[in-house]
Image (tube, rainbow, N blue to C red):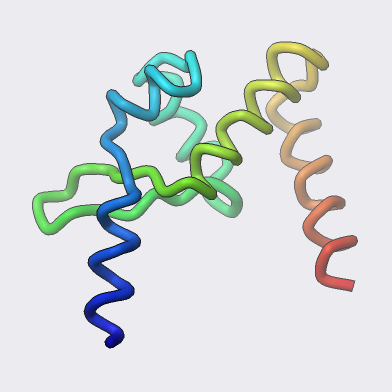
Length: 91
């Protein structure tokens, strides 16, 4: 049963190129955001080291895109904002 769940999650995950197409965020930017927002954006890796973005990762990318490109947050400001949101959700 556990293996079935893992397989299902991997089937829903998409490559970084597909994630880029879905979100409208360039591949190099996705890699950069993964480093800058490691606490919030952590796509899974295949055995060969390729990134796979799950639906939750795609949603995080959309959130980052909104904060950084629409609301004009700095990287540090976006990180603080996400930390505050995570703290509220945990409470």
